[in-house]
Image (cartoon, rainbow, N blue to C red; front, side):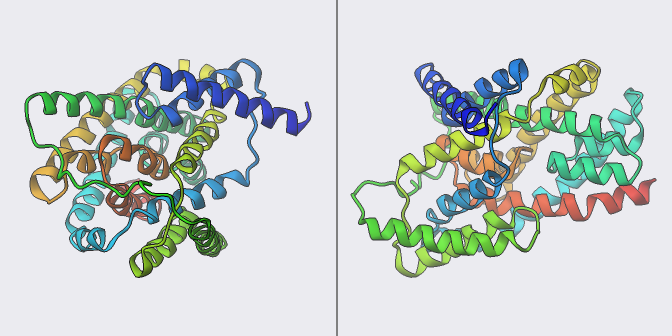
Length: 347
């Protein structure tokens, strides 16, 4: 089938998924609705298609959206982010090593496969690294996909229920600082200049070849611009469109082969989802109690999902996407750079 037809079909289904999810009030509906429906379509037909160039495009746009939220007040908050970053990184390494050993002990998987299948890194990156070290990349990528999907589809719902219960009990869960919204009509020139700066810096980050640098570079460029002149601006519909595209990007990774492979990994994947949920809540609570982070931000900073996707979702629950990104990305770099060395040492 012609690629244009497949792309058109994909986005028609994604928009239908968005509308259905919005109608039934699904958490993070703009991302989860398209994700579920495109995943279902891809499993049934294999027709879902999004050009590979869309991945860096989505990262750059996500960086622009997050960077546009950065204000001078946010900068003052970020100055104290070193403590939650240290807690997040060290706890991630600790429970990843423990969890890899646990899966190794209770299943027939070898240690390398177990360690990289459960590490909170990118599915492709973990699969490729595990292959070089004697692991099974098929198992690693399948379990990584489940981790990512559960972090996006299950964790926000659980966190939302906790937040709702906390509000009913009059527990102060956030610092009531509202992120800037599009309350006034802004000139078109602001949006165009924002896109120009964001795309330019994002491309510079992308050509470095480093993980997530397209997002980090565009986010930094727009953040600096906004702190200097306060003119960074993208309308809210762009954020919704961005979440829809991110949902499609994730949904297309679900194939019939993934579902078949998952049948052989029921026990380790169930253990993984439950343990990660518990660890997310425990470490999030630790951050909330020992730092100045509000509860939604503390918990979402610990969710072991794609850093870009979590940053896009968390604002719907009152968390600061800027702070969540500041904590999530150091964790990603440590998992990619330090974790493989630790695994090699343990072998």
